[in-house]
Length: 149
Length: 149
DNA sequence: TTGAGGCTTCCAACGATGGGAAGGTCAAGA
DNA sequence: TCTTGACCTTCCCATCGTTGGAAGCCTCAA
Image 1 (cartoon, each protein chain N blue to C red):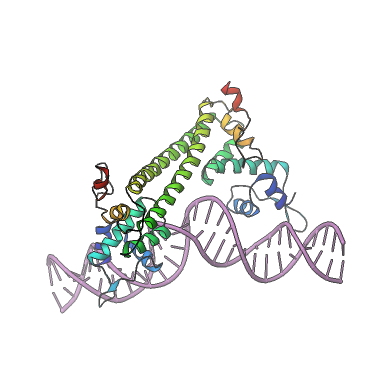
Image 2 (tube, helix red, strand yellow):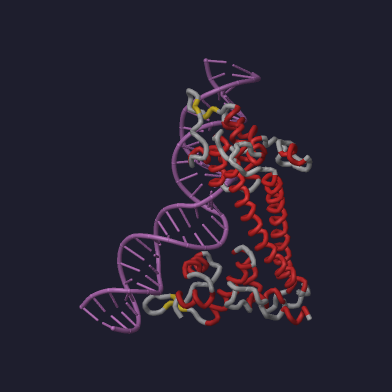
């Protein structure tokens, strides 16, 4: 099976298959006499594994670990679970950050008339950015308060 | 004010200030006789604007638009609101995707004993990845079902 | 035989940021 | 005045995952 067929069968693009080979995530493929890469059913199986893991947001480094465990028949499920839980933690943290951003923006946008006048609490907030962007527990004060009262 | 002071005052690193200048997000800074960049209070104000917008997750391209509107006294708040709402939409979509990932992984992890045995529903799920990764509405079937019943 | 389409490698770009090297400048202290 | 350390300058490289393109070879069918 050449790279194009393997790509269609696995859902991983040919470009990415070559990249994964180049970076060592997957072993070098067999080659035909003319130099074409040649893939087996097992290879496609591995590529699907990678594709599914990418869909779940695992980094390539994490997938490298997971592939190692996948191939290791004497693995301990605790090792797999540890990687998964760490990734979940990472996802939840990022989700929290993005929700914070979205909520802040939603508040600002709901205070913006959104008409042809120039006055805009969103710009006013951006403009009044202050130094304590790091601590951030105490709410920022700004033009928005006029709307919220 | 040299670039280091401007960086400390704005919360934008000197590296990024140079980068923003190079890519045209901000105009070239004035220079002292010896070639050092020289920043005014207005410049720092603009850099804080950028910093705050970055903290809210706006891309540099979006910030470019926002800066244009910020400087345009005859702007319409509707234009600002449109950008903000589109960004909120983007954030909520990404949040949804990541929540989907986290929930799926959480389910898998909760079915994983996490001990020294090799059997692992997480790996089993990754391994059984099927072709309909795109549609995905109907739940994937796999080893996980044994646990969930 | 020719053409289409697939394969190969190599190079470059994206976005935002950080690191570092090589060399010039500034300000304070001896 | 000289030194020293901290700062500035430009330039190049790396990240991460992915995509694009160019130039050239291979394969299959008409």
